[in-house]
Image (cartoon, rainbow, N blue to C red; front, side, top):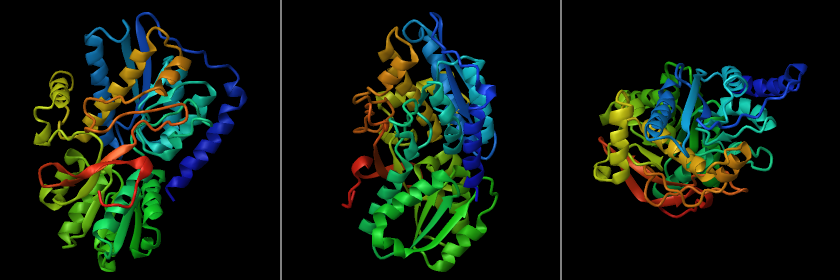
Amino acid sequence: MFVVPWIVLVVAALIWMRSPLMADPVFDAIATDAEIRIGNIMPYTGPLAAFGTIGKTEAAYFDMINARGGVNGRKIRFISYDDSSDPRTTLEQTRKLVEKDKVLLMFGSFGTPGNFAVRPYLNDNNVPQLFIASGDQEWNRPKTFPWTMGWQPQFRAEGQIFANYIEAYFPERTIAVLWQNDQFGRDLYLGLDDKLGEGARRIVADMTFNISDKSIERQIEIPQASGAKVLVFDGAPAIAALAIRRAADIGWHPVILLDNASASIANALRPAGLENATGVTSTAFLKDASDPTWRDDPGMKEWSSFMDHYYPEGDKEDSNAVFGYAAAETLMQVLEQCGDDLSRVNIMRQAESLVSFHSSVLLPGITINTSATDFRPIKQMRLVQFDGRTWMPIGLVLDTAFVGGAKP
């Protein structure tokens, strides 16, 4: 199983961090009068390199902020390292950021296994681990891990939304589930199972894959042979592209539900063939740059100008560029609320005090709210369907904290 190595790693990390090698304390970093150091880990290489766009966008965003004078009179120094989606490297690079680069906080690091690996270390040393680029429900444990906070909607809630959609519109159809063999894939599957209840008996094919897989022909051909009429996919964009294209190649045309993380026109739908992806349903909480609805939207016009001036090599159809921009806007709100008190304690205090904050690229009706007991900043999503050119909304915005059984 893919998930075993990183679980073993986390246990080993806990033992290691309590060894004599960790006897010297990590000195508390402070923001100077000139700069605020922010650490970040991204998969710029490896099987999940497509998500590196998030980190590149965030770096460009802070360049823009610095060009405008910084925040509270201080420039931001954004230090981002590559971990190639290897949790061992994540731990090494995070220790380097904290102990050598003296970052004040970790922000927006990508992935579930890597963030699990570093969470004990950061919490033991009172280093904020803010707005993780992962929707695992584990990031909402403020009593146990008070220095760790997620950002995006939870994967499990997304699975519940998919289940409600299937029950409302396809109650008699059999289901195939194809999911990434790790905690990321498992969470959405659990959410699907939560809401299907007895309907889970309609799952006639349950297939997994690893992020390193180059082919998933078998994982598509078996569900086709099962007669499944609905395919729920949860995994990375590159594999999503392979799945959609393979299904079309063998003449299998189920209703396809695609996880939000893979709903990228640039990284999944375009490689799959836009004609093959037409009709695919997913979830969204951010505006889609390819949707003409937002052509005159002030927030998206500003985002487009930002891309032109600070990240011109970026692809405007890559949803990860919108994701990184929105996450960086959220951190900016926290830093602005901090004023001149940029202690780590106050950073966490402000991060858990966001009230109805609306990033300029969030969908209308979706706001960011946190509290000392709720570390889930974004708890709303909506269903969307790809029409061959852009993602079109289906129904209303859904509160993922109270996913019901009615039609959206």
